[in-house]
Length: 161
Image 1 (cartoon, one colour):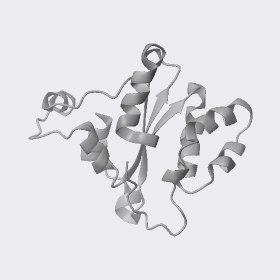
Image 2 (cartoon, one colour):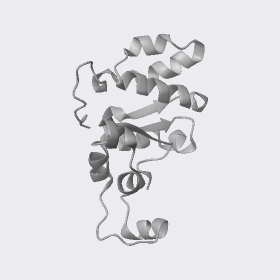
Image 3 (cartoon, rainbow, N blue to C red):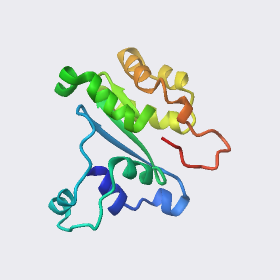
Image 4 (tube, rainbow, N blue to C red):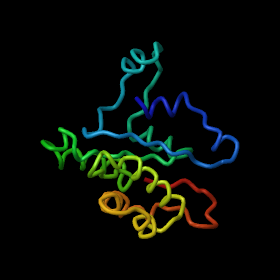
């Protein structure tokens, strides 16, 4: 529902005024939810759409204006009993944009670090900017993001999932 809301109701000036993608993070410890139905949309917004995009379709559409990530909280109860299923469901849908978070108390640091890497800062430099346990959590979370980073001179082209 968050993705549907961002897709159908959010206009962000970073994109509309400057052509720069925004950042959209969702956080949880469960598998990818089922695709939305028209009934879900009606319950949330009081309107019945003619069609509702699938999760994959929403992700593709959002990628035009957003850098979309899902942070998987490893400390959650679903991760404790269905770890491989949760991870697989998100990575099958999002690839490297599904990020593991080993310590929920470091959520902000992982989000900041993700943005820094996507904006072109080297992963090793980002990790070194944190100390102690934070650097370990950040290192695990952002280790695979270098290939998604914007490089100086990039046209801001859409990153493919």
